[in-house]
Length: 447
Image (cartoon, rainbow, N blue to C red; front, side, top):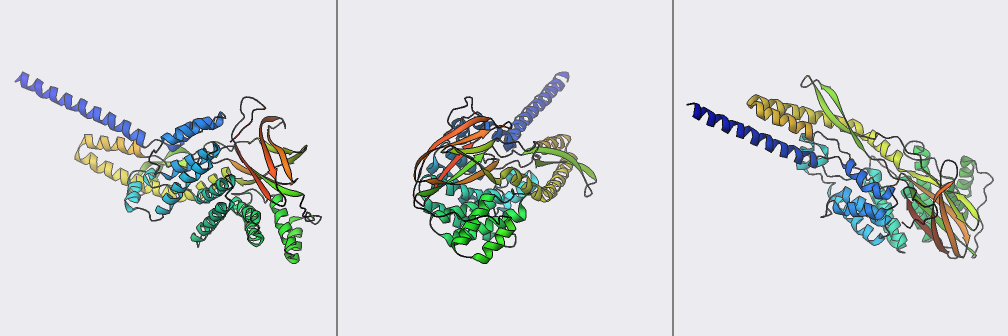
């Protein structure tokens, strides 16, 4: 009898060890599958912060080898362009664009999984500003491979995207400004003027919130085209509004062309995760919910300064992606918290039901719910923190251009060097990325 009891006891112990082993393995799998995207993004961006973008690209290319995830494709696309592969960048950004289009018809299965488990199971289509910047970066890739018509197509697609949002129109100031620059470089002045007007309207209405205040350069572009088209009434009205009564449109000369310098400065903020207890009146319990947040304050950027022909020019911020990211999350937060609370109620009820059937089942469900309650921290983290721009009139010919990055004391910590060719009455573009100082002061940054 004692021997039989011992055998039974041994079997029970073995079963318990087996269950615990399976539970441990399951926990490890769940932790990996629910891992914050922010932690991956931090690792991926290390190369950029070390001045070695090729390392960041290698890490990004390892994630999602099938290139199906929108967020993975966005990061790869940005890192490819930073590494100078503009064609490869557009190839993978096109994948992201197509996947976003597919996600407009949201899967019911995905929605149910997001409600029951966590929102990372929902397909990521990006915030609206990210969707518009996707077109902007594809346009800049086309510019950098000399296909300005391709850039124009991207701007048209971005315009269609904004119109699709209908009752909730959303414009992006930089996308509209870039659109105007592209149209003007193609000689389409009417379209350029419309784009500059729209860009100014966004800056005027949302400056200081999602966007910086309207750049002086844009105001000059708007006045210049109004004067060229002899729209004097509107011209005078804007001059008064801008407090630029002494402004005079520059004379056009065959001996000059223009250089548009665009700098993508720093890195966008990374979303973290915060969990708090929220009281649910439905189940009369405090329930744990997780939600995304930006834990770090906005970073102070180094100041870019363009030098050419012994003259120095200050650049203007035309897009504040840090502000856009925080504002967008703030606008989405009520819906995120509502869904998180509903999800917590579903999990509590399943946990309670499982506990009534057996203590072990209840325990397993409790652990599962704790592990799977993760916030959706996905965002396009290889975007810059800000985009800066300067438009410079230069004589026809070759010029050595430098973009110096200045610290708070006004001292250069890094420099980007580039030779540019200016053609008569034509617009040339110099587009660069910069993330952090590299070890040597005079080392050239080539991304």
